[in-house]
Length: 134
Figure 1 (cartoon, rainbow, N blue to C red):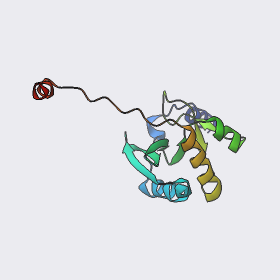
Figure 2 (cartoon, helix red, strand yellow):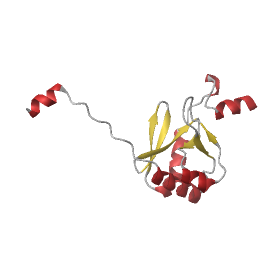
Figure 3 (cartoon, helix red, strand yellow):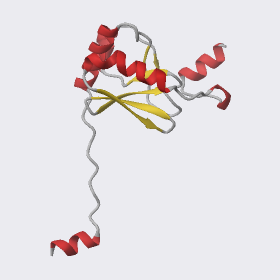
Figure 4 (cartoon, helix red, strand yellow):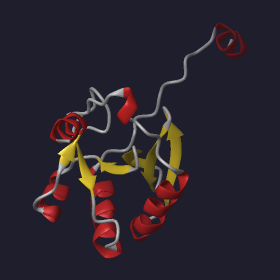
């Protein structure tokens, strides 16, 4: 069991250990986090991205809630487990206090405030677009 736990913490999982997150769990996390703002989710690579007011703040993988690391989050939570949600990912905070809506809402709100907005992708200009301008 210790080996399995270490592998999960390092983001390395055997195929037999991987199970997709349930929609029920995703909706529960969103409901518990809604004190921070508008919480939404999007299916990504078989798992889910979690957004606060349009900004991605974390992931749900294998029915675990992973939130991006921030300095404010470290200060607010003091001691918190960190793990990679998937192989080759940066470590995230592993949220295990879903029942505490007040703390979770404050934590998500502060994480949202500290994280930068996603950069907008530049639209490639097509040859036909240039011809229409001229």
